[in-house]
Length: 240
Length: 266
Image (cartoon, rainbow over all chains, first blue to last red; front, side, top):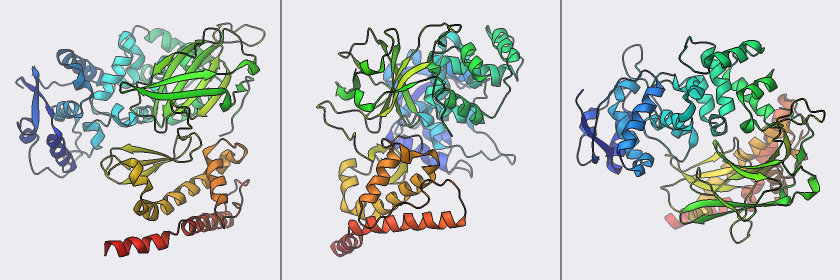
């Protein structure tokens, strides 16, 4: 695909995008391209060009978005119009198809970020991975349980954590989650601390449990322990 | 779920913590003062303040018991407005000494105050004693109640439906919405009785129950201390909720106001 000028939707553009999404599962009355480049619905941002890319996982999404944001002024990072336009621009990545080929209905907040609600904004196709990756930029292995998911993925683990900013922003807990839900099920030798995390889990009696059950266990521990101040090893020790 | 306090954690009374929120140049800030002498906490105990509202959360390090400075203010960067924000103050063990004979260990919570409602800048209660918080959100419906993971019910109003204050206090809204709102809240406190809120006079359920009981005609909730659920219990409780909503509607003259609204619109 060719490079195109980066844009953001204006208020009317966001409304038209809402119409497009509402009809997506049954076939919208107009094409995405009809609104993506319509001058009355969009504004060009800083003359930057972007290209639609195929992402391997959410980490790749996050890195792509970071690259775009580096080139534009910072106020765009809280602009619904920016995130929505970029998500629709990459619609082929995020439109999951049903068996019959029709697109699966996705909640609107996955396309248009709702910044007033943490769960909704972290569930946005682009903003979520970018936000999680920004938290762990210096140690990206920590968040691999979430960032290794497919770009359009919305697993039970992701859903369970999305409603808990206190867990997503706690490094020790995210390390435990990556050790349990990523390293135990994936062969990935690229993670620098993979061996040590794997070793910790293997020497403990911990096994993969339903994410909601894990969160319940963590909530129980947090009544007496400040998990935010504890390392992965210390949390695992408490859980044994 | 039962709570086990097996580490000897102390409960800090909410009146020993003063939290004030204010808006400075468009940013929401918070300042904290504490009076913790009575709890005999170690000087090197670490203080953390956590702000939360539903699934949003942020944490601020306040230093140690010895270095804590009540003149400091901190930005609440995760929140756009103070509506419904609650605070948790933790004093924790910082030393990494798992072999210690007195059981000291990093991360152990030594003392905790939770569900603290902030005061406004002028020291007024800022709704500290309120039983219903109001905030505006983006949605298609006009209103909804948030009752999960909150320390007291939050009435969410559509942000495009006008001023939240005038809407929430309008007679139209009180007449048409409040009985349904009260029903939803009372149903929730009935469900939550298994968590034992009736023993905690600072819980929102206790405050709402007290409010309901203050309305003429509302009698004691049946099976309050009984977590068994069978047909008889279910019927009694449903009757209690219905009767309480009826009494509330009567106290607000909902029918009379509804008739006036109809006449006005004709």
